[in-house]
Length: 99
Image 1 (cartoon, rainbow, N blue to C red):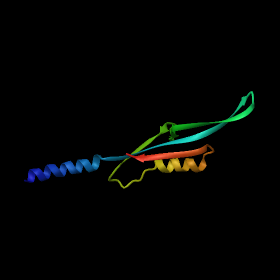
Image 2 (cartoon, rainbow, N blue to C red):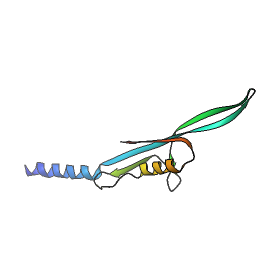
Image 3 (cartoon, rainbow, N blue to C red):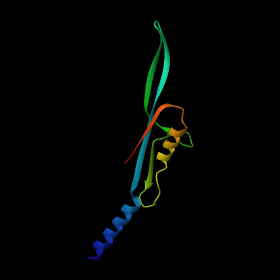
Image 4 (cartoon, rainbow, N blue to C red):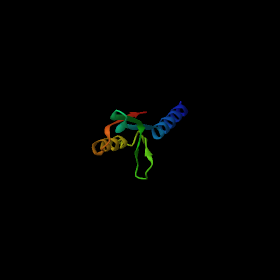
């Protein structure tokens, strides 16, 4: 009986230490350009999706994982919200999903 308690305790301890929560974020935006045509100028709107902000090292930052038992919060969503507040991109929208 004590062998089963010991094994289950070790399994639960390992599971609580090794489990991670991950969040994935990306953004989209529109770009309006003026095109010269035979009939004059026309506006064309291009939508770009699946873009990522860059981390401090200049690499795309699309996912952040944290251990479940540390009490830490995700910082990636705050970074995307900050980008939304400071960007001059048209129709900037971000989406984050916890996995």
